[in-house]
Amino acid sequence: MEESFDTRRIGLDRLSLGHPRRDVLHTYRRDGCQVVVLRGELDLYTGPALRRLMREIAQSDPVARVVVDMTELSFLDSSGLGVLIGGLRRLRASGGSMHLAGCRGPVRDVLTITGLHQAFPIHDDLPRALAAAAGLSGPAGPSHDADDPSPSTGV
Image 1 (cartoon, rainbow, N blue to C red):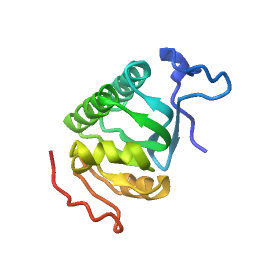
Image 2: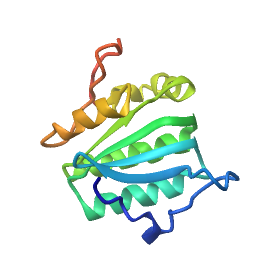
Image 3: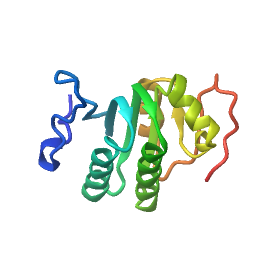
Image 4: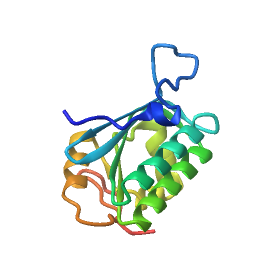
């Protein structure tokens, strides 16, 4: 297993929201990609930590391939969307990419209602997202898994 991103360096090693045994942000490297695992809620309170992490990743590896695992994310508000969009723009501008994995329920609904499901490559699960991200040679446009009827258009 590859070494994980040092979240302690930027003060994110134990970010939790009233759940002392459950981190809401965790990172590791797998298959040449930086995986960011989100749990719980991505909102005004937790968004700044993810923003700092995305900046750090983009600065340390401008062509980074980032997969955001949202399987355990239960809530996403407009400030959380802003953080994801900012990370996507920053990575694409430097030749990197960002894929979303495991978007379900209300989180998937928010992405669809806002039209952002067309901006991000969204995959049903982490293995599919990793496979797609690892196969990229440059910036990624939207892509959706075969069982997703959503159209694929860029932003």
